[in-house]
Amino acid sequence: MKSMKKWFALLLAMAMVLGMSVVASAAPALPKDTDTKTVDITGVEAGATYTAYHIIEATYAPNDGGFTGYVWAKGMTNAGQKVTFTGAGEEAVVTGLTSDMITELAKNPPADLESMSFTPNQTELTAGTWMILVTPPEDNPTKVYNPMVVSVYYTVDGSGTSNELTADDLDATTNWTLETTDAFAKSSEIKLTKDLTNPETDTQVKVGDEVAFTIESTMPSYDKTYYEHPKFTISDTIVNGLKYQGEPVVKVGGTTLTKDVEYTLAYDENASFAVAFTEDYIHGLASADADARAVVIEYVTVVTDAAVVKVGENEAKLEYSTKPGEEDEKTDKEYVFSFAIHGIFDKVNEKDEALPDAVFSLYLADAEGTETIVWNPTDETQNVMANKVGDYTTGEDGEIKFKGLDGDADKVYYLKETQAPDKYSINDTVYRITFEFNKPENYAGEDITYTVHVTDNVTNETKDYTVTYGKTETVIDTATGAVDDYGNEAAGEAVKIQNTRLSALPSTGGIGTTIFTVAGCLIMVIAAGLFFASRRKSAKVSK
View 1 (cartoon, one colour):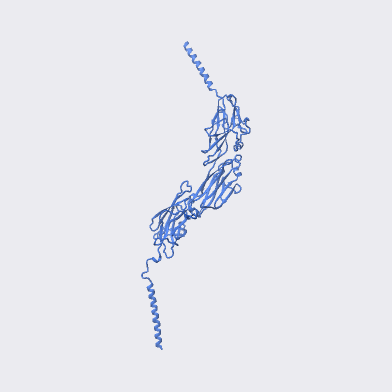
View 2: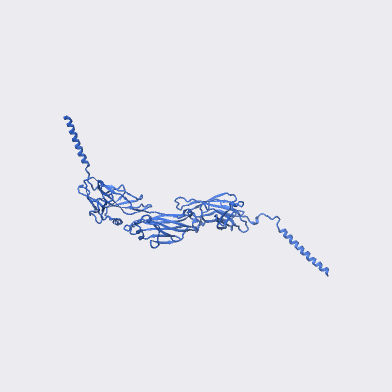
């Protein structure tokens, strides 16, 4: 029994010791100036960099005596002054910490304001409030950023606020934690897209066609306090093969703007235009949502002959403010394609020599056309209605060529001789011509190819020709640098369309009429002679 009592007393003593140690270990440590925590920031594009500025810092009692409050940090105009709060608990906000104050501070942070390079979720920040400035990446930035504010603060047992600094009544002897207010970057996405308004019909076009374009972007939210002189200018430049057909229409948020009120315009119908939005108009949209800041510029061009030699091209450019005093730009291009018949047909005589002065007509199939193309003389059901595209008269080289044609897959052309050279017969062969072209994805103006398919109505055989098109030009005069107006010749052996001289045609009239003409003349002469001889004889008898 005595032994049991001793063991019980020993166990009780051990329990008391353990209990004391547990209580001692549960006592909270006091906050100290080395307390740090990471902060997360979302909504920022990859490659952007951050700078953190300490604008409010925590204060502590000497000798690790714990947290005592918050003061404005060194470098602030009220440095060292105690931070005061308006409201209490979750409604407490720092007096004087306004968006206007932050944007003004961000324009030109004081040199003695504590700052550091910052990486979200990696860089440890000490207690207080930090201003975060984001610099977009140098390579193809997509957003413009306004200044942000994040806080690292103390709270007790989950009390306090997740949005603002806690008040000074924090009891450092109780259980406490260090919290943060993470941030979502207030940014504006920067984009610039330039597209054909009707890509299904206007990618492959003929010279003289009108082609409409649409440029779209979104104006960033430029706070007047932070961006005193924001720039947002959209320009368009014709590189080749197009000409403007009037000034552009400018819309923002679906509303058509007025030139010289909301924007200014520099315009040259042969070269370029630039739409520069005014600072007052830009500032007026700072608080508007993205839809209200959506920019649409619409304009129309006409395709010129230059689009045959090189691909038709024009470029849109956006110049915009990224930070106060700093600018960047974005570009986007669009292309139109026009096709030619060149290096495919040659007009020749019986000796395969080039034959000038032959007239060929090109027709485009059209169910409502005014011309009838006879494809099979013995089968009228194969006749095709068409409209004439144009005529071409062969020169000394005998080539038959046309340019500025629409190469859409549904376009079918017909070529036939409509007037032979003097003393030559017409060749009645009809040729059907189609184009095959597929615009590459992400096309950027490089050389590409298209195919010309040619079928004749005599053999019904089809020949294919490949044409290189894009940037490469065929120089026909090295001295002047003149290029071939019809673009590059097709690769492949040209079709020879032969004509025959009329004097060489086989006889179809038997022995001809000459002999009968001569005989008739002789009979008339003999008859006349006999008539006059008879008159003389009669005269002698009467005497």
